Length: 113
Length: 115
Image (cartoon, rainbow over all chains, first blue to last red; front, side):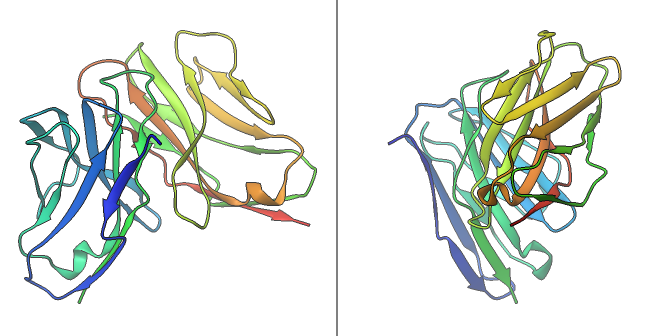
């Protein structure tokens, strides 16, 4: 089954404790992206990757890191989480550009206390 | 920068009736794509319908159709014969046709379906 998986689905952590949210897709997509969703703000892009070893900042990259060492994986790293990073996070992937549908993972609900 | 505006934070519709969700966008590009995504309580993002800007014909997917007015930069979603399962948050999204192409989302419209 074609899908994007994210782990964990739920995470409660404390300020400053490093964490990683994993994202994996099995559709051989070149393009992968992380979004955060906050009430009243819709979804905003954090980082994206056009292909292996190619990553770039989206609209709200502060406090996040990513890496793309393999085509299928695109982890999101929070080196020192803060309460303002409490949010719902989505990983998405698609073929390179244009009309191709972005497939979304199930979301990760992160709470930083 | 491109922006997407959904002016209706909440809407409701009677079951079996028709409802239209509004979306406007701002871009100077000529090559782009527009999407409507549905987010039910499960939080999964589900593509409902897409429209290529170069196509004049409005896209249709079963009970879902769009009214794409390119000159007015308007992209509304019409849901016919509304069903209880249509209750969800609906997001309008824009994607440029070339280069880095993130989805730019509106803030969403929460649709309630009344039995």
